[in-house]
Image 1 (cartoon, helix red, strand yellow):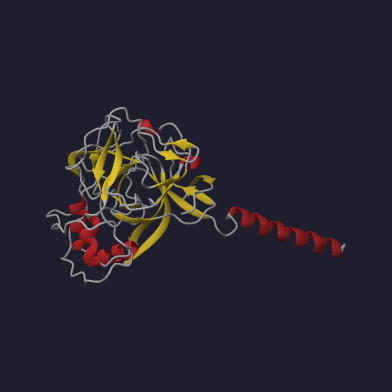
Image 2 (cartoon, rainbow, N blue to C red):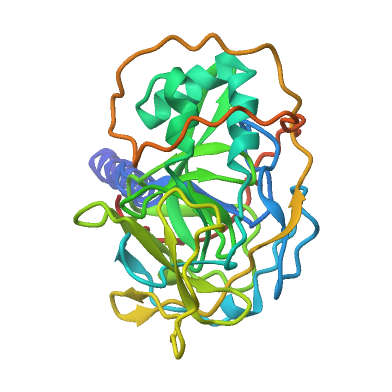
Length: 333
């Protein structure tokens, strides 16, 4: 009887270990926050510097909100996977209109040197290079739910976490098509990491784990990004670092589909209008950012324009819900 008890106890311990390992993804699993278009998210660096919601969206005029409605164009699930950052039509926008206020973000970081140093550290540059780095990025709108490594700001440090950004989110991308900044919170972005994910937060109605894409860098830097106009569905070229004023003419008969393994991108997502950016955090004292060399290559040297005169006011921190909406395997970055 004693031997039988020992065997049963041993099996129970072994079973417990297996169940525990399975629930955590064999040690590689992690929580992935679902972030709706306008939500500030976890420990935001700034308030929103995204412009007000544009045609075909159900969004409000610029200020972050907890809404989880997706654009009508994103209502049909599409196949996810990895997609090249240089793919024509991967991103959307509005011709001759920027989705993100770059000078405003630059001005805020310049006025808050502690945040500037943490922000620049994520991007692999010196804080003195932030303005030129930002002006080398391009404002676009996501056309598919996209996996990233997001970064908040807490106790003087940048904190990283895995996230899925909803289709329709305004971001800045580099010259290889990689998302580098989320405009609703000013957070720096990097490629995603890990697998065996548990999604947390409130899912939008169109969210499907198998519809999430991971953007990989284009084989070579590009000079133009082919966007899908969210109002007309036609394609147009936006120069890297451009904010709308130098956009190309519409291209007729564009399908607006972004290629990805096993499927194509959905139609035009929600975006931003020229009605002006939302109110964000107020500026602090001017930055004395020390000069230094870049750790990672910036996507392109833009003109060092002066910081905006009216930087954003602080937005309260908003943490994703801890309730898991489902599990699924994410794409490794």
